[in-house]
Figure 1 (cartoon, rainbow, N blue to C red):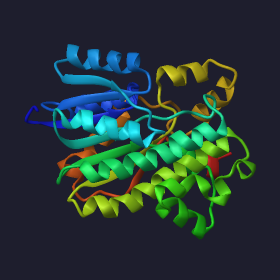
Figure 2 (cartoon, one colour):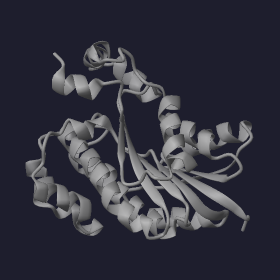
Figure 3 (tube, helix red, strand yellow):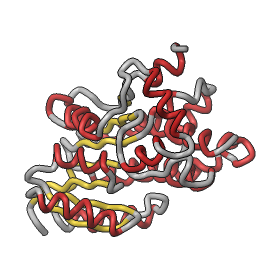
Length: 273
């Protein structure tokens, strides 16, 4: 075993890469993705920039797969940083897959990494501004999303397929759950002297976002950007700057919080034209 701090990244995309480049200096970075080729590409980029990294696979919808990832990461040292940037979008998967990956999978990650994170460690969940578009839930529903035993989450009545309108609704429910789950898990992480937060990005320019902007729904995306206060999309580096703050020493008093970073798209959605 290397005597190193270990950063675990689930989801080998542009945002996760930008974050680990900020916080991974001097640490061993384990890059995990459902697609090993994606993990290898990010690990190669990190290697070429002077980082020590190892690619591997993970299916965050599977607890056993997550446990296997943790076992792999612990071979290289102590897990002190965790970033989850994995997930599927409303245009990528059916309702049941979105709930299984984005909602249940994130809850399992929070639970299992909370058991192994080192004292003084930090984690961040990349969620989405979609959680803010859901509107109000009943307090009982919010409490259930936050505290229901992980293996019982997908049995909640309002998460049954007949009660979920479409893939966007499933995605919004999942992202609302992410923020609530982070709040609840922060209490448990705190008992180990560790912190956990979430970030809810808006439209961030990644290969997937460029596909959306130039695809069938592109006009809607462009209208959101034109009408929002910032009048532009964000970049992975801007999300990484926020993650660097809340995962570093300057963010030592921040835990159990969600940070909306969307250029004001949500503000315009609720209070603009």
